[in-house]
Length: 228
Image 1 (cartoon, rainbow, N blue to C red):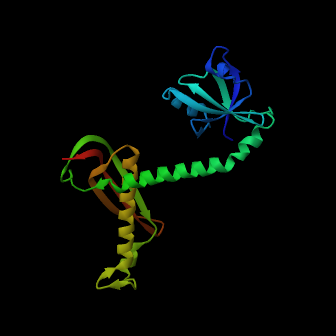
Image 2: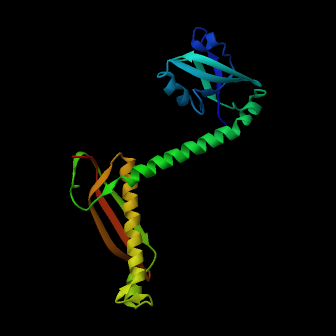
Image 3: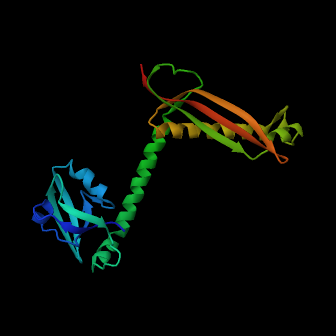
């Protein structure tokens, strides 16, 4: 449940001057719901004036504080074996707002990630035409294991062979390649790269126990490039 319970107040600190007391629950800080002390610390050193919503019993207090420490000790709400009457009811009233906001934040993050990944360039060459490498980050890899025995199906002349080609084999190879490249982009984005160069695709068949599987390893160098 969101909120931070005040368990101690510095008599000379900002919180005391604002009238904050022990067992008050700090609920929102500059419009953001507080789930941990980090949510309070990070913005407090940046903003000159901060909006703070405090729950005291069934009462909602809207306060303004200056930048810097509030001078309070906090623990996540609720505290085990301690009942602070009315607070749970007030927070429950914000439940839908919190859930909707969190979902929107998650969707926005996913959209940003998808946009970044879509712009990541992948090439088998050691460089990209029109770009220069400004930073080399790391070697990255992606793996794919397919459960379709495409080699045996091919040798056995499966029914979908047309013009000497096996649609089963082609589809499985295409799926393996696309999956590995997509995972390379994800890994590149994770470490802050915007391109992967020198990509190598290594196909092999893994056999054992009368079964056979397609194995593909894709590797490349994650880099940061800029257009020239």
